Length: 277
Image (tube, rainbow, N blue to C red; front, side):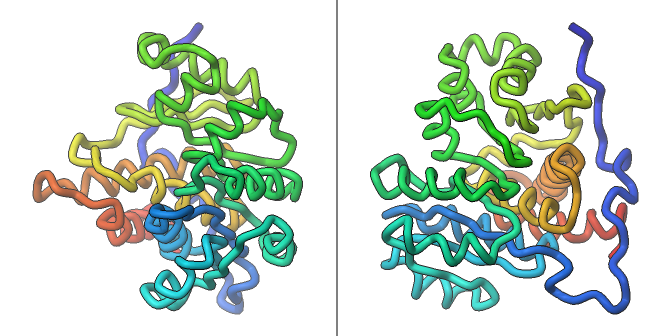
């Protein structure tokens, strides 16, 4: 098995085309973040803000009804909907162009119902966090364009093995995930690996100061925004992962204590440097 190709953000220069002068929000997709179960509203909120900051035209959140008022107040550009039954998700799915499924989703009956409805919609999606654990239980093969972003623990559940096995041969694990489920996979960690039909690459960016909660939620929102703007899943994964990790390096210049949302100003600046709007 050949070694993964190293990938730097500068290798992706121009991958996201510039916007037309007469473009409008409808040209850049509508991301729907599905998650934020009881006690986990912040995960959905971070993913949604990341999608908005990285250029999605519209961003909505489907979350627990009790969370909707304060999520809408903290970032009024987001459209926040309280959804307690899968049937109530259908009107939101009909308006979305890309789903980000999993941030703070949980694994209870509510989560299972929303997971099933999202998969049935057949929309391009980013699958993260508890949606990956539900996928491990359901063993569904992906048919719609998708990017899946497990950390080693989630990858171990998906492959029915141990974390030590995943970490002992991360390259083999990334290949196995892609072969088992199809789609595009991001095996997160130091030197995140991206596997799709084009092969395997390794992100050369990142910093240990990024070891804090919410980083994966921000990454999932960034990936959703890039899909919404028309990138194919493999290209969106390569750009999103490198941009996220390079932004982490920039945010870590002042040392530890980097929070997930700290990455977004740096990510916007770096994206403009390699793919001007």
